[in-house]
Amino acid sequence: MSKIINIRSLLLSSPYAEEGHPEILECFPNGAKRTIGMVEVTLENGMKGLGEGYLAVFAPRVFESIVELCTPYLLDKDGFNISQRVRDLCRVCDYWSLQGAARHVISAFEIALADAKAKTLNIPVHRLYGESKAEKMEMYGSGGICDTKEHFRAELDQLSELGIGLYKIRAEKEDIFRTAWILEEASKRGIRVGVDMCQNLADPPQKVKEVVDYVRGIGNLTDREIVFLEESIGPADPEGFKALRRCVSPKVCGGEIITTPKEMIDRIRDQVYDFVQPDASVIGGIGAVMEVFDKAFQMNTEVVVHAWGGPVAIMASYHAAFAGQGQLVEFPMLDFPLGDEMLGESKAIEKGYLLRPDGPGLGITFSEEIEEKYRFDQTAVYSCKTLDRGKPLESYWNES
Image 1 (cartoon, helix red, strand yellow):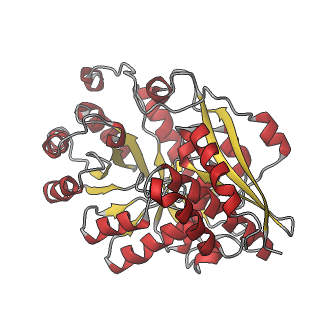
Image 2 (cartoon, rainbow, N blue to C red):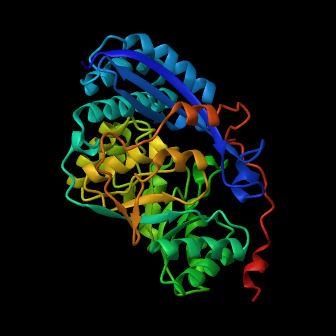
């Protein structure tokens, strides 16, 4: 019943945000379109499961090639023994990708197997990993890639309508007046603000002193406080994160690009972050996120899953959050029609809270029509070499 009889790699591309959006100008040189990469597994009982690896946003053909390499090692194996299948894949990939690209693909396989197994058992995926105590979970809005006051206000209006009270913006060390402005503007609606400083892509990344000066500069302009600082220095500097924690009051967080539970757990033990942000489509799947939850609970460190991928990646992280007794999850705010079609009612929000997805599997909708509608476009690739989008001068944020 549970033998794996077929495996497919799926690359799909969808319109994303809109032309002229700051993230498009900065990271999508070929226009407002984004790609996701999925693995579809079919069991001998006819049940199909979908998994996603974040890698395909950046390198879709690499994702496809690694899926092809791994496929022979899983065919005809027991798809219900998910942990053993992950070990099989690690044996294939660890020599040449102990960390990095292969882990994204292993994530996709693990999630797909969990989806197929849970659908066969007619239970939600989170029940494969634990008993969720919560029926809903607080969300924070993830947007804030805005270069005008009107754009910021539109996103704040969206959050107010949804009842979401925490807003993550993107900002860097020079954005002191911009951040102070949005802190004040958001407070008028009772919305708090966290800041993602996006230093995973920076070369060179910000220094600890520069982040401290940024926080202090904002404090000279407003009494409103930043809730958290995400990826505020480079990911290769855990000691820097520890030093930053000693110098600023906002919570210091990160970890979305970490590709193994071991590395994340080592950082938890070393108290690198106030809270960690594992992504199920990066770190090895839902089971890997559960390892992080287990250790974080022992060390009194909060886990807030990262959810900025496609619909399958997002739902995988949401299921992990419910199984791990999380308290807060990310709500991506940019338009992504493919995601909307595949998520359907699974991503149900009520008064600022994500309702627990309790349908079979991940709760994803997929069809031949969706596959045909969102055919892969090889130009729809995220560029890690960011472009200058021409941000407004800081003086703009002082204008009334």
